[in-house]
Image 1 (cartoon, rainbow, N blue to C red):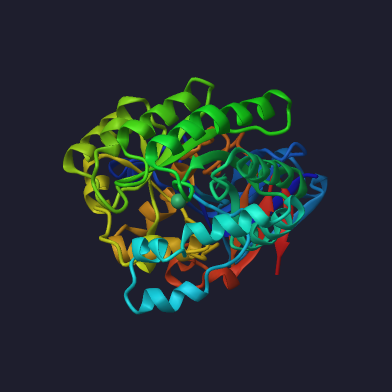
Image 2: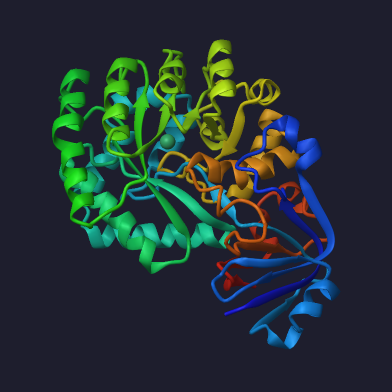
Length: 422
Ligand SMILES: [Zn+2]
């Protein structure tokens, strides 16, 4: 299948020199929006040409394309990249919403038997088929919202058997729907009931990781990254470090939760062991910001969680000014039920004062960098995957300005195939 998207009012290519990420300082000079532009995608699903229509059809006549979309009065942006999700689970937590509105904190709900403990019980009890069905429904909604690459974690099993079940669900979904998935093992997402930190760490190191490695060796799953909920009273920095290093030794990228509720030096530890990405960062220190800026570890910021749990806002403006690479994610999970990177960009601009350009880069190129995939994803450049979102608006900023903007998405294109159309 070859595809020509012709005469778009604007094409946000993001950048044009195969940059792996853009820091805030680079965006002013290197963020690129082309006017009246067309994009060609070849039979392999790769972008082959970008430019004025006349230029493209002088080398490949329009009739040679198997499909042509007239994008007059529309804009094109890259497929969105969601840098952080927990999308495999059973049992929603709508019942906790009222408690939160009355002021209960995350930890208070957790102690009352709700929160992650509730989801772990439901996920352990659910069959692989039920979990897969729920996960596919959620991925379909993400695709409808323009997401073409997603990071997806295990972490509601907290035992070897259920963590493996979740990773197998992720693996199966890779073959059953169009979104590319970067898979993350997060067995250290919380301490299982009845286990202290030492026992839980031992279980991850001695039971869960070996089981995951066996399944990788047998070709049942592939795992790109390892994650830990590095937090006071959960997995503190030393336990987190042991778990993350055990994954790194086996070739996994380090991509973990740190400094969400309390500052405990998780960022400093993560940078010292070569973290690719660190999420949350509401409580990051000034020193931590400097460490992230100099190491090029990607900060994955999650506005839905800060919004829903009324957390202190992460110092995003300061991170951007100091040269940290900033990405965004929905953090889709039973606590923050959001599948839309468009909503996330709107929240990030309003809550954290990101510019619209910074938010778009954070939701495309930089989010792809957070999972080590910005060589093929996150910008519209020749040689990258033909992942595009077409919007019914004359200027691209509508996709952030219009709250609940998914209705303005007219097409989602994945590797040259139209996978969503109005
Ligand atoms: Zn998370």
